[in-house]
Length: 195
Ligand SMILES: Cc1cc2nc3c(=O)[nH]c(=O)nc-3n(C[C@H](O)[C@H](O)[C@H](O)COP(=O)(O)O)c2cc1C
Image 1 (cartoon, rainbow, N blue to C red):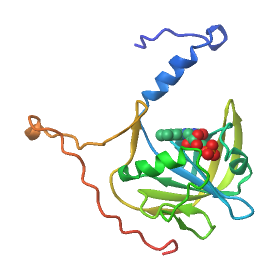
Image 2: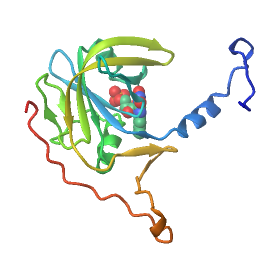
Image 3: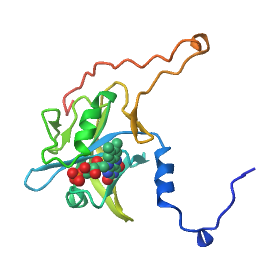
Image 4: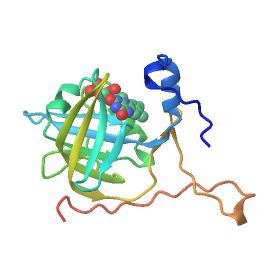
C-alpha cells in the first residue's frame, strides 16, 4: 500500500525551494562535460550532472542547461554537441568546466568528425545533433540525437550530496569484515574517432 499522502497538484502548496534543492542532492549521478563550437570555431562547454538517456530508438539523450550560463546562447543555437562521461580522475576537469574561466579547453581534448571536443580518455563520449530545445523554467532542456559513440573504460566520476564520491566495490559475504576495496582505474585504450 502506498503510505505517502496523495496531494492533488491543484491543491499543493508551493514547495520550499531549499527543500527541493536538498532533495535533488539525494540523487546520485555521473558527471559529464558538454561541449560545442560556435560558427567561428570557438569552443564552449560546461559540466553537467543533469544528463539522461531519453530513448533507445532513435538514440536520444538530454542535458539541462541553466539559462544563466554564459554558454547558454551557444548551446540553444548549436546544431551539434559532444558529451563526455567522466572517469573519477576527471574531477579537476569537471571543476574547470564548472568555473567561469575564459579558456576551459586544454590539450586534454581531441576533435571529432564534427569539430566537437571530446575527452579522449572519457568513460564514454557521444556526438549529438540537436533534436529539440525545450524551455523548462530556469533551464533549457537540450535533447540530442546520438550520431556517434566512443567507449572507454575505468571508474566513473560520481556526484552525490554536493560532493564527488568514490565508487566502491560491493563486498561479498566472505569479506564483510574487511574494508571495501576501491575499484582500480583501468588504462583506457581509446580508438581513433572513426574506427
Ligand atoms: C558537479 C556539477 C554539476 C553541474 N551540473 C550542471 C547541469 O547539469 N546543468 C547546468 O546548467 N549547470 C551545471 N553545473 C554548473 C555549470 O557547470 C557552470 O555553471 C558552468 O560554469 C556554466 O558555464 P559558463 O557559465 O562558463 O558558460 C554543474 C556544476 C557542477 C560542479
